[in-house]
Image (tube, rainbow, N blue to C red; front, top):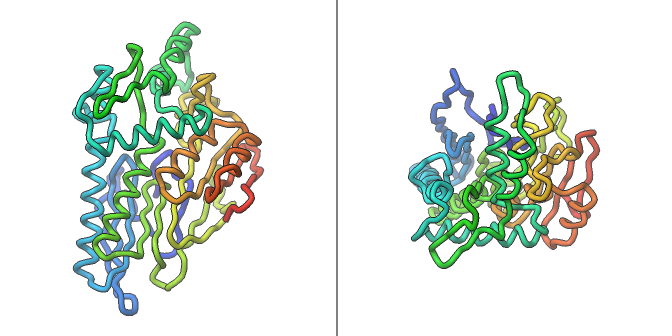
Length: 337
């Protein structure tokens, strides 16, 4: 059972998730011999979502070790990027407006995030946190969102990635009250790093699914490409599309899981220009060489209008997208699937 707001993808074949019991998900571990290899399958609750790793290895013991090392890497990086743990550099930056001596991993992700912001004409912006926090704070028990014009305009005035000042391993936010959220890029980066760990430990064929951020490499246990079904955002059980991948990445962005009002007009996806949530797209799925890139591009296209999003994605070689509107229409890029 998927619990993360970005979960639109269901991986088929070897990928299967353990059931949550009373809201808690125990660690699920399975291993089976498939021909000359062993298929190792583990599911854990990490990064606020369900993470499943399926890996093939000639040795059952070494395969289990590879998967364990990959989960260790996820835990290590989660300790850098989480904004809910007060001790992480991201939390320190948001609390104090500056942070020194950031890890190389955070510097890399922030650099890429700012580059994606420029590439997407600011549709992707890690500084929308003040607006999202305002929506979250103003949601009442009746599902209504009540906020004043002054509150909204103040929060929006704090948005803009031009206010993020990076100098080596030091980061400063230009305006008091600014904050960043790396939710639209960090999880993809972590999945990519976990994939690299698996490959380095001999599990060159594997799939990682972290709440819909999916990385595949090699072949599945049947010796064929991994199969991924894109789930209907309306949850009617009909898959709008099914694709296969050997080595690749896919991520989906959409606001249908998390809303701050009962009319479902305000979600965690926020335009850095208007401060409003997109009202025309249900989900955007993007394939790219890395999950980090797919993650960021899917978030950016979710903020754009459909035509602009398609034009943007068609201009990027080797990157494809499927846009599903709230009316159920599907708009693929030229080489999608």
